[in-house]
Image (cartoon, rainbow, N blue to C red; front, side):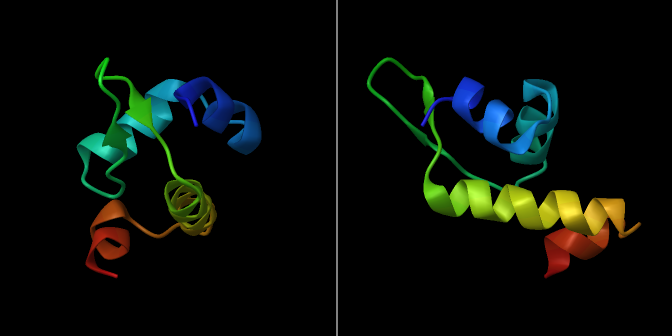
Length: 65
């Protein structure tokens, strides 16, 4: 799915999604046109990250798990 679809599902800005990708917490596949293709697993991982961040967990702890 596209980044637009993911940001609508999770109700977070695309900058947040890209940030977590840059931090290595998700790794979406790239299509032939180099667009990101997010899987259901990527979305589930992002949901977990968002919940853990709201609970106050730092990124370093999230990336270790």
